[in-house]
Amino acid sequence: MDWTRGHTIGRGSTAAVSVAMSRCSGEIFAVKSTELSRSEFLQKEQKILSTLNSPYIVGYKGYDVTRENNKDMFNLMMEYMPDGTLTNQIREQGTRTGNEQMIRYYTKQIVQGLDYLHSKGILHRDIKGHNILLCETGAKIADFGCARSIDQVKWNGGTPMFMAPEVARGEEQGFAADIWALGCTIIEMATGASPWTDSTNPASLLYHIAFSGQKPEIPGFLSSQARDFVSKCLRRDPKQRWSAKQLFKHPFFEESNSYDKINEEFITSSPTSILDQGIWSSAEESETVDDSRQTISSMDSPLQRLRELEMQSGKPDWLQLEITV
Ligand SMILES: Nc1ncnc2c1ncn2[C@@H]1O[C@H](COP(=O)(O)OP(=O)(O)OP(=O)(O)O)[C@@H](O)[C@H]1O
Image (cartoon, rainbow, N blue to C red; front, side, top):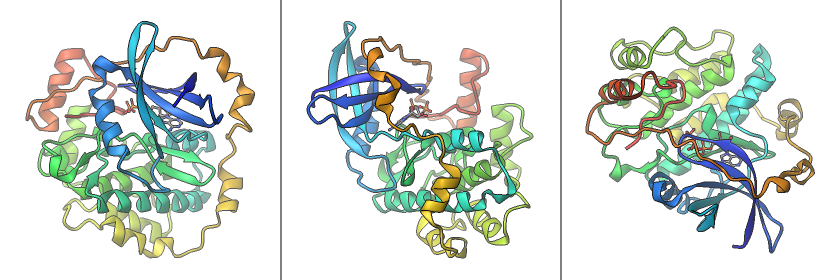
């Protein structure tokens, strides 16, 4: 596809994401790019995303390699999601007791996305508000940088704050770990805060998740059905946790959920047209990618690996830190 790069709309630890436009059709899409020589993670993401097709997963549009500013760039093209991340949406809207309708609406879509992924044997391994993107039809799961096929998971990965107890202990990482992370994400939606609020550093947080026997606190202001739903996600024993398929039938979703009502009330930040924003003027800007994500490919547990990371680079940004192999 012949396309033009627009301005940067997001930066992760491994790649920069820009808006882009097809020169032939004028179609707008998002492109996640990094230098070809450092594109191992992005290529893994591309391979997984290319096998997926669901209204609840960010759409795959192809990949290519371009030469920009004397560098070969690997580009993953995706559906453009104009309304940003769920985390940003929560921050913009603020939290309030009345937001359960929004929680139900987005949660239902994330559950459908997870059910689809799991039915294809794929673990996302990094479900959190930051990796749920929004558009006019609601929420879609994005960022497959940590995702793996169930038969290829050699070791555990993810973000400590959203990590299931069995993952923190370095045991199996199955579909149930995504469900735990979903429970944490619902708490994030309800409170606007992290699911674990009293931990001060990642190693003690992981230790706490792994061995304390505790769970994140489920907000008391949620309805009993919502609290029951979250409790089914946050069972410490992964075998007792409900699957995405079971959760989809939970009474929490029984109440009808009008998209128009939700959209009017909660999605207010969408630009009228991204072409109005003058984005194409910056198309020639060079994008420097924050490539500070550090990965350790040893067979250590997440806790051991975290200690290695801390020793190598001082304290990482542990709220967002991903541990990947
Ligand atoms: N398809 C998209 N449409 C619109 N914005 C996007 C899209 N994909 C990513 N973004 C933006 O770019 C940001 C970074 O993307 P992404 O999380 O996929 O990168 P990453 O390098 O894997 O980041 P992380 O370090 O969080 O894993 C997102 O938080 C979001 O703001």
